Length: 466
Image (cartoon, rainbow, N blue to C red; front, side, top):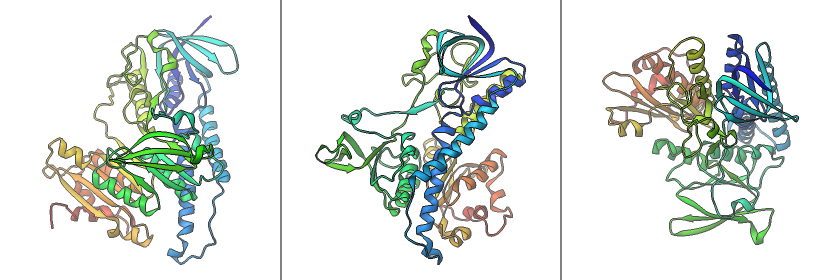
């Protein structure tokens, strides 16, 4: 028997949960389908667990630096099983809260795997056995991404960690090898270095964090190197295998560095080379929905697919894979379908933070992007050693950099690599969204001594002036 709903949401990520509630509140009979855990990547394998573990790593880092502050500490050790349990407890709490919000009047949470059998029909293989067939005029796909495993000879023959499985280790790796120099590789690399591992990052690009300005990437590399992390750039992983003498307790990478070939042996291997969409099991050909060559669902600026009534929200549509972007996708759909609006994803400002320590907070254009577009710009840049609060806390690594249109005096973008860089970048974002001139930050009265006060001073440090 086919069951009729007004709306079906496949997946329970950060766009799906609030959308389900909004639809139900509007009187729409809504089914929310989840194949694993509610909350999507953010709650279960992304933001929540990783930042929980990053916090543990920072405590270990500060404890080891006690002498810098005149505080004597005993030798520091890390109980990774305890770190893991703390992470699990917080994830379970968040997950439970999400489950409660996905039940109520007009809203049913169904655990199972969804597969399209027609444009508006889904077959659900229930987790606890049996099946259901559902139909709806509105269907929203929010199935997210998973770790991509690159095609490296021998990689599938050895134990490989992903962003999900590495957080389930109960002992600190002796030597963690990481393939990939994006934000996932860097966050885990620094975290496990602070837990006590030797860490080697192997990255094919000319710089870490490929999308950032070269000076930002160089400073990030300098910080990680200071922390004792080995960083190999322009390094192509040619092969992978078991470690010394075929020992299954270790792993081996064959890496090409220019004309040199190097063998690296470690105890564990993390693959952090990107993400791939969870679309292949949906049987999208049965709907007529178009996907691109990588499996991402194609949408227009209103998140509509090529089939009327079917929408893709969150990471599965491609583009920036961030929780706050997924949540804004919900606002787009909710505004347009339930409020009669015409909200779009076009030209929205993209903020993000890389949670290394110090953080890299980013908003708007990079200097490289602005110059590539031929824009007339000025660049304000100041080291964190010039920030009073950073000096007082002995957290002076990094710099802040803000891109300005000299004619309109509008801020075009910023990179804040420094203590609480994400928070400082958010202040800049608010100024950008309010169309404030940079002088509003330069001349604003901020409490002393706060990190925000640095925004008074950075605009007196232009790179085009001596």
